[in-house]
Length: 246
Image (cartoon, rainbow, N blue to C red; front, top):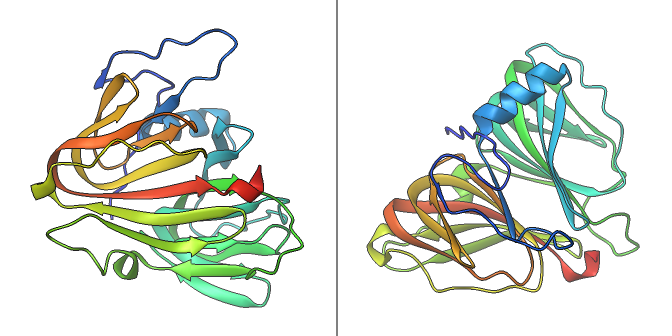
């Protein structure tokens, strides 16, 4: 499934207007697409590029070429991988899960994990959120895109919350074109949106931007946001910072 993203910070081609904020206040949103992120990562000569870094969460681009050895160590925050392209296997503790474009994998903080048997160059988006917790939760969970969008409905918006944990909530938001969008929502937690399918407009407070597959938008807690002017059915992966993670 294509997920071509190009990154810009706070302003990019296709955005309508810029964010105006006090110097002491964090912006209400950040928007990125993948092409520029890929170029930045390659220019830096490292496999990982961090492009969102907030107290609630961080988001990065992680790439491994076919046949590579993944030398990563366990992390102190929960994380979610979204596979943009490539094929391989992720090992988590004693388990293995085959990944392909559209695969999504949750890994608990401090769980041992790495990618192996990489048969096609692997490109993943990674979100870190929360941290070690005494609450019981699984070491990992894996999902394929076909299952995530299986309950799509032609007449109404669908929210498929497939990861619901003390540190994070992650789901697919599916909006049919015929409804043309949704109502303005305001949350008391930060979130990050990955546009998977469809085009249209995304409104955050007084700013509006064009959306297309591959756009990534971080929305700060307390900012009103909505989708509208849809061109095609819209599928958006949304990760929320759980309140317990603050």
